[in-house]
Amino acid sequence: MKIGDMVRIRKRKLIPHQHAGPPEWDEWWEEGGIVVEEYNTWEKIVTILHEGEVKRIAANDAQLVSRNYENE
Image (cartoon, rainbow, N blue to C red; front, side, top):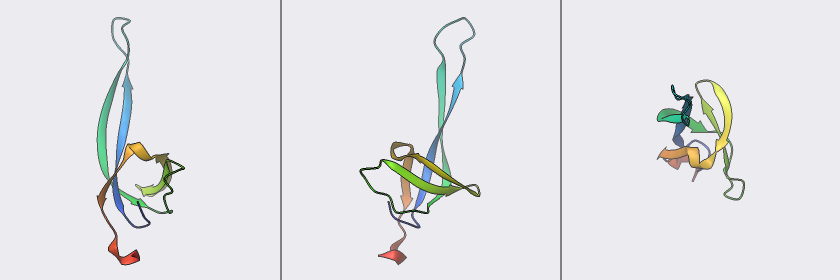
C-alpha cells in the first residue's frame, strides 16, 4: 500500500452471549479510507484517513480497493 491508495477497513463489534456462552464478533467492511503514510511491510501497521480521523490499524484489517497511480 502506498500513499493515496483507497482501502476498506474491517470493523468489529463484540456481542455478548445471552446465556453465559462465549461472546461472538460481528464483522463488516467500511470503504473510504485513504493511506496517508508510506506502509512498510515489517511494521504490519498502516496509517489511514477515515471519516476525517487519522487511524493506525493492523494491516490485516485493511484491504486495497484502488491504487493511486499518480505517485508512481
